[in-house]
Image (cartoon, rainbow, N blue to C red; front, side):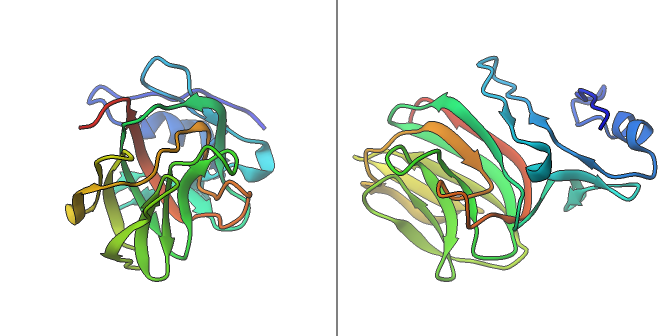
Length: 201
């Protein structure tokens, strides 16, 4: 149950050496995923729900880059005070291996969602559900979404709907990473980056 804050190495990458020295041949989970923006929207969760970053002496990675590993059953992260306005632009790198939620709001009203549904990647903010890019099991994705009720946009690995479709007017008031707001449909896969901007990029 030891904990250690781990930052970045001289090249600006996650400091794998410090993690390896700290854990050794054991297993480690993430108790806090720190917000790098200065807004202190850190994501955390109780011990039983923490995603892994190190398993039996090996750093968890996706495509050679350090990744948070979600088990599809218990793992997720939460920040109940993170809030957004519209438009909001989101960019993230994650991999799904099932019909899962990358992130959602913290309740039924305040929702900006990215998930996998009926064989397609999807995004939603209360109105039109953006779909159209086929889901590929285990494919690392870079997703780019603009949540805007007037002029939304949605791309998965630079392929998607483009812009101009109203996605809905909902915003976030709290975020769940790796699960649906109902505390189910949890992500089986990995997360590597999640960035929010309070503008249309």
